Image (cartoon, rainbow, N blue to C red):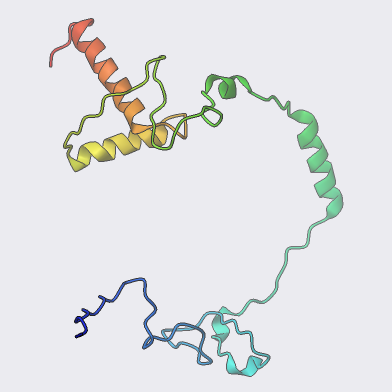
Length: 163
């Protein structure tokens, strides 16, 4: 029996290329002025640094007695208050059992209809900006869109706004 011709498997992008060398070299790369170099070798004479940028190890000397007095006056004059009300207002989304990718319920109603819309890139930037300034870190885009549509609907229907 004759063998079947097997086509060559196309080279994968994740495959290790034998021709390329990845790793450390003993040579220091020379690209511009070297401000500071680091080496694991014991030979410190092979490292070339520019003398203009060397540290002079100058430290600011302070009187510890003055520091102690200022620290005690600052702590005694301040009243520390914890505002836990703002934390209680946020919905804790960490313990709710939701499958990955599921949108949480909004006002007790679970979103179950999926639709696809084509949006402009400027609209996506605005949605991402709204998501970044939302007080809940884990807010879904669907929640933001729902709030925006509810606000727009209320403006048009109840407040007499125009489209």
